[in-house]
Length: 577
Ligand code: ARG
Image (tube, rainbow, N blue to C red):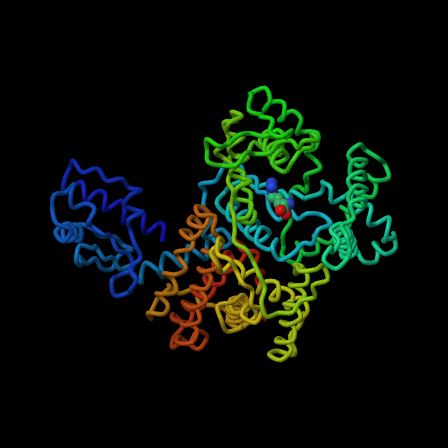
């Protein structure tokens, strides 16, 4: 559709010039003004003429009529002027002879863009805090982050994915104390990250106490934890060994989840990596006169920007979350020379990012406007009873395990003889969660309802994966396909191709708005259009060879576009379900 829109927009620009030589209408404005009418009887594209009325000194109705006479293109079968709109219908012949062959020829690349070529994007996402649970709150950063990475790659950008592990901080002091008190090497080897989280939760509870029920807070334990972290910071060997071990156990566990999602990172440089990079930035802040002392702490005053101050150093001189982010951004700019640095976190961190982005600007770094925070809403969970070993959070891996288990039992009933049932259940179970999550605009707060996510009938992951598998099954059964010219003979086919050819635009919009849900919704549009075609138009038993061959190729085009779209949102392409 991008090509068609481009051609029509060019013609409109020319036609407007012919009507009034002084009228300057930009090509990009016209392209942006072309709309998709809500109803197919109004054509496939519409151009509203109201805004031109003033410059052309004619009524919109007259302008539409004049333009209608001038537009003629091989892609267009009908141009009508209706109530100040120019309604354009795309020709079936063009769809069959140009669009479908183009999709098939471009294959994996269909829908890809080139506007990112030569540019570098660094994406900071997932970034769980080691020793704290990797819970469903991290689903958003993980799948939105990875999807944005895929989208940018698809647009030609070079991408560098960073998992900024929360691998430093006082929690390690607590964990070390808890491990020595209640843990053992064997128990941690056996229980892995679950054991670490258990120890962490236990010491936190002990420190907090339960004063209402007669258990006072344990300040001594808190002090001991701080002391152990301090030792760690000073390079105490025993503590360093333990710390490294805890981090590696956690990473192994995260990688299982990432594997299930098909995600990998280019770097796991976590917070600890930036420890020695902060002093230089603190000094720079100080030299620039930006640091103020407030109750012993060092802050950057942001009252001119209606924000609370950004905390740089605590009273005891220790650094904070924003300090590390500033140092990390400088390092990344120097190391990767990014054109854009994207950070995906929950909306609760909006202020944090707004603050330190502003500080980077005040420090005089010219690239401050290349920093982008992409926030998302909260996730809660209803209905499904998940083990909450860790208190009140639901672990991501438990959510996946439950989805896989449920999908397995649904598949057992539907298709007991399926080969590789285990693998497929994993792809569909995990896919169900991902798809359900990414179906919503990212800022929306989501309440997870497992049954809805797993349903094979609703607008779900299993439904679209099943539809994809259906295209594969048709193609597997098709055998030899006659080499005949393509033909579109029904409205269902035309509607399906028109849906497919909007892919490129959806990709551009998803990148512009950092919104993977546009792709999810696009996939649903294809699935709906394909299933309508599938039910109403016989494919393998079509009335003659030309129609049969055309429909098979159309099915192949659907498989291609759907598959490309799946890749963009971490959804696996299941050949069989
Ligand atoms: N570890 C943090 C958390 O779980 C997220 C880190 C986000 N990235 C960053 N550069 N601040 O809340």
